[in-house]
Amino acid sequence: MNRYEPECVDGVLVLVADEDRLEVGTVDDVVDAVGGETYAIEYDERQRTQPWLDTDDGVLEVDVRETATSLNHTPETVSELREYDMTTEKYGLPARTVEFADRLVDILERQGREGEKE
Image 1 (cartoon, rainbow, N blue to C red):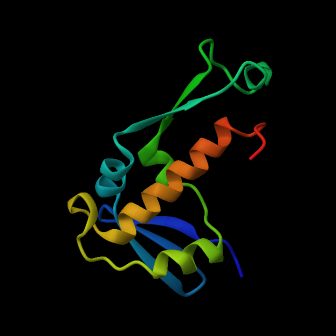
Image 2 (tube, rainbow, N blue to C red):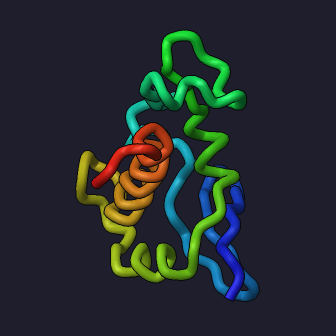
């Protein structure tokens, strides 16, 4: 199966693959759940030597709205997100939206910890 691509329809984020669609919530709610329009990823000294990383202080600011609306997701991730409904729970936001935002932050954080052993 193909990866799910984000689609934004009237401010609502939907993950789409073939004929399958999963509503995640409004993009504004995703941004709120992440904590704002930008998210800072911190890189260590070794990672800062990468030619693609253009930062003096080791911090890369990521546009949350752009990332949420452009990052593709695996069928497994979408299947797991389906387990959460769209009722308002955490922080006054839909449970699925908050779970999606948490996973987005996990993906971003892994970028900064790429070289770490877990």
